[in-house]
Structure formats: C-alpha cells, structure tokens
Image (tube, rainbow, N blue to C red; front, side, top):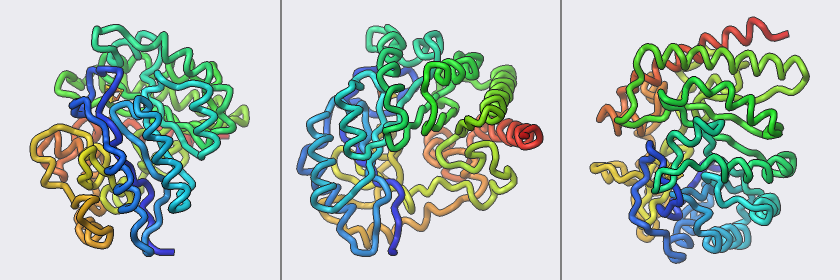
Length: 351
Ligand code: SF4
C-alpha cells in the first residue's frame, strides 16, 4: 500500500480578484510557471512508496489560471493516473462549463462563502471595497444543480466578530437554496490582528453553534443529515463523533498527510505556509521540487506529528499569531469548548 499523502497541493497563483480583509496570502501577482507545476506533479508522484489521495490546486484564486489548471489536471491524470483533485476557490469565476469539467475530472471544489449578503460583504470584498455576495449568489445558483454529480463540495465559512451573529441564518440560507447533499460546511473563526474575539463575540459564537446543532437535528429527523464541522478534519466532524478524543486524534496531518508547494517550487508542510508572506516561514521549508526527492522530504516530516493540545488550534495560526507551533490560540480553545458542548447536546437529542 505504501505511504499515503491525503492532500498534496500546489499554490498555483497568488493573484486574486478579491481583497478579503482577513486574507493571509502574499499577493505578488505571480503564478506558477508550467515548469514548476510539472516538477511539482513529478515530485509528488516520484516515489513508488507514496500514494497521493488528492491533488490540490490552491491560490490566490486558482480559477484565474484556468488553462494552467487544465494542463496540470490532464498531465497528472495521463502520466500518473491521479484521479482525485481538490480546488479551493472564492467561487466568483465558477461557470457551468467549469463545473462540468470538475465533474468529468473528479475535482472537488472548496468554496469560500461567508454567508448571507451582510456577512459575505463585510469581509469578502473587491479592491474598491465592494462586496462580492451579488456575484457569488448567482454562481451558487448554478452550482446547486450539480451537487449530486460533483465528487463533493466544501463550503468554507470564515467567521469574524462582525459576522458571527449571521452564522446559523447563513447556513439555513444555503441549505434552503439547495446547497446540500454531498456538502460539508466548514465553519471556522477568521484569524486576523484586526479582530478581537472578546467575551461577548465568543458567547455569540456558542449561541450560533447551538442553533447549528438545531439545524442539524431538524434535518436529521427528516432523514437529511448534514455535515457541519469546525475545522478541517477535526474530531467533532459531524457532531456525532465522540468529543473526548481530542487528545490523540486532533492532528490535521500537517507535513505527514498533507504537503504543499509554493509558487516558486518550495515544499512546505501545509498550504498555509506555502502561501503566506510572513517572515520566518522558510524555517518550515522541507525542500524544493527541483532538487529534492520525496524520500528525503518525508524524513523531515515526523516533527509535525500530532502535537496534542496544540492541534486544538491550527499549527500555522499558532506559529503565525503566537510565534510557537505548540501554543494554541485562545479563540480556538474557547470555540472548541463550545463545539464540544454542542456535540454533546446533539448526541443527547438525536432520535
Ligand atoms: S479569495 Fe482567498 S486568496 Fe483571494 S483575497 Fe480572499 S482569502 Fe485571499
């Protein structure tokens, strides 16, 4: 069977049509060259002992590089038989044709949607400050017709203190619109030095999570369970998993099960490190797709194994905000406690 990298991603461009207020992606208006894309795919597939679960295409806004994406997907399919791709997009350039291409090539979109108009337009804005809801909403109308045909869909909802009161209404809005079926709603706090997660915004967060619990229970009772999770593959994944297992199962797999390549071909233990501009990130570089082999890179990865409580948060944000991989952010700690309460509430009330 060999070693499985669940998600090997490339940071195909840092160009973006939005200027979200909490964005951490370095914007140099650069994209990967085809040469670096090809070398990244060759690197990922160079070892007989390593399997790639999914190949990720991240940005910036990757759909700005549609021709490059198609070339990468078709090269990876034809040369290495890769059959599963993930793409992270802000959704604004989606079209029927692109969605049909996703279906044909087993590409799962992860779409950033902060919610109803007032929530989306607060943080997900164009360079001139205009909100993006009106455009995105029309794209979701197209998407909803293909929910069953796509391999899966993830909706990433970044919640800030200014949008937290709209979370449950936003999830209801999306479900009522027809964004349901093979979808996971990934609701998580937006991290930025602009935001202060004070006691009242954390209380509101917990209140909204309980309302999400009620939405889950209503849908479950109608035979239509929905998947709402707090953060990546964390253990309260769909409310039904036991909450106590945090200690040993919380790791996202950074550097062991996920790996990412920056625009200039450097390999990092996750896509956040590959795309951010923060000074000091090179300390985490595991090599270069032009010069290093997968075997050499894998030897450097064990350091990023499960770090227990640190993984309550996100190791990238721990490092970025607290200057230590092992120091979880307070906001994550508090929100986890709330998720655990809500998980227990849902498990108690499920019929
Ligand atoms: S869409 Fe993504 S990459 Fe673009 S500005 Fe927003 S958060 Fe940053």
